[in-house]
Image (tube, rainbow, N blue to C red; front, top):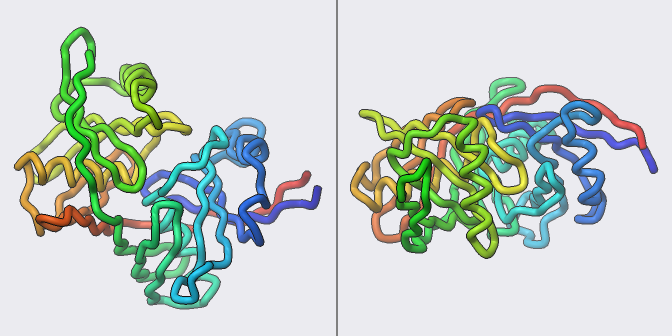
Length: 266
């Protein structure tokens, strides 16, 4: 097996190995697991494959492999990392890209300053899937299901520590046919404080689609206003999401940063 070149990026603490790849099979799920191992590999929340686009109007295609080797439909923080990667390759300080994902095409407007960038990205339309009740610390809580191209379950006001979320997250996810990312939200004046557990990864410092799902759920339930940016504060930093009334289309603004480039042997 040939040595693999990669570039490490992070977006709000969500960290990835970005790999320019000729095909989706360039990295197997097993190798993705090995690469993401934080003790015996490079370490990361996932591997992002940057592939040639099938649509001439798109700049590239992004395929995501989670730390457990599974393939989610979409990754919001990963999309920003790929957009920054392309801007660095293109030597562009400002760029607008259309990127293909397993959840459809997404836009990304990049404002780059050296190795970091602020990126405004289209997150697609949120779809509300009803409410599921689930016991949290012996109390029945309502989880609002939101699809952002991948499934999320959002609950407001459930007092959970990170360690407790490590138990509740996978337990709730196991009740859903395709699993679900779980967001525990504490509304604070002017912002949403969020802890997130991601299927295929575990608890992470941030989740872009999760932040969008939280914003959609908050607007739909009247906690925030449509058409105005809401700060979603995650352990890794803040993302700003605006949700359109009616369509529930979400737009997000947030950071991405190059960390280092490297090569790993077979």
